[in-house]
Length: 200
Ligand SMILES: N[C@@H](CCC(=O)N[C@@H](CS)C(=O)NCC(=O)O)C(=O)O
Image 1 (cartoon, helix red, strand yellow):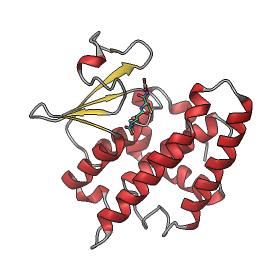
Image 2: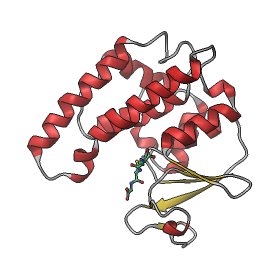
Image 3: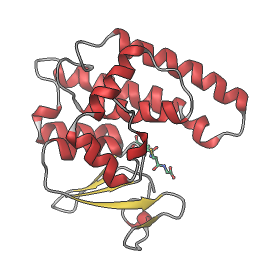
């Protein structure tokens, strides 16, 4: 299996998940501006969508859309998911919230010139973070161990720092907890973004 990723992109969630379970996988960096992969190929030939994450399975099937890739990973590696009757549904509910609400509201930070639009997005994202913080069920979103939802949230928390978005204390604590995990520091080191790690 092979993960196409870009440093500090949402693909970091998948990168962490694969390292957490000790999966055997290759990884290749994509330049999102030029759409060239590190080995010089046109990333549009991998996926016409032109965005990461893209996960190429051993049989050549290509998975895209972070929510779907992360869900697939939990099916292969149940330790990354949420147990119980409603476990998968609750996890998808949270992944959808992170993807369609939080991730989407970061778009102006990356793409807009309007300070007004960015200020509105900041306020909205903080309210969305508050919702997750209020519903945490232990040290992580779903209890005492992280799931793929925490990995995706972690990326959003790194973006929050980059774009000066206020983060509620329980999520700052979750971020620190995540950074102490060997898989997280290994993924950050590999992507060359270890300077985003907070001290302590
Ligand atoms: N709908 C996609 C969006 C993925 C996405 O926004 N990827 C960003 C990085 S976080 C990207 O590759 N952007 C480059 C582009 O859209 O050209 C998903 O949920 O996976």
